[in-house]
Image (tube, rainbow, N blue to C red; front, side):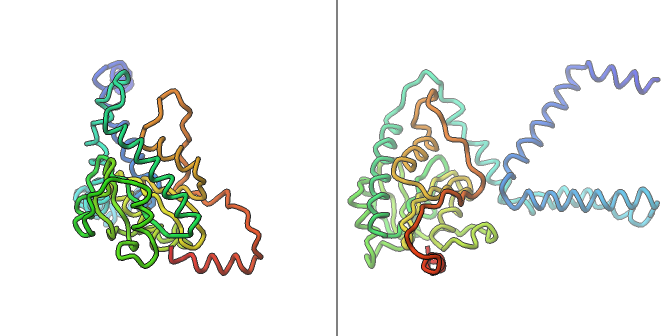
Length: 301
């Protein structure tokens, strides 16, 4: 009865409720950061393994296994930052993005937002023309996480963002057409930038290097990538390790404006897709054999 009374007293203790609430929020936040990444599968594997071992040690009374488990917990605390280094880094970067938290709803758009509004229009128009010409392109929009480390490895441009300049950069066989361009506000910082490729090979098995690089940089930072396929002319957007494919000019503009928070809060926002969206493929007049050949050739994108 004393234990039951103590438990009832704790249920009405504000500090105990706050304690449980804080721990719940922390666990939920960590799982939300790990959602859609390899870390979620690693967490499931670790939890499943330890649950099975604890169950066996408790049911069968295995003293040696109990001894090993009791001494494994301290080592697991040290191993967690090593195993989930990339995910924890991304979580702390997102936690440090306080700019959106401090922005009041009644404050109007600043000059940077106006610059992004013009930049989005130039990117969309350039992407549409590149798509019609079947010129491959990879444009990365920098947000709060700086991409200067990647820009330093490319060719400095520091030019005003225009669709004509983007088309000239990605013109086939031009010196800067390969790799990516990094866009900061209304300026092209650098071109011919080499980006990290995503490690999620299973989900990107039918995608080429250009798409994998576009996804990979969004896994390392909060950037947004616009990818134009050289083989199919399809336009895609990558953000937070996710890829939205088969976009037309209007949908590309809406997606970019939504991700960059350029639209008013009252407007309808598109719900975030699954990690990879492969649906809504455009109809083609080619035969199935020709389509399969095109898919094999599009691996280079």
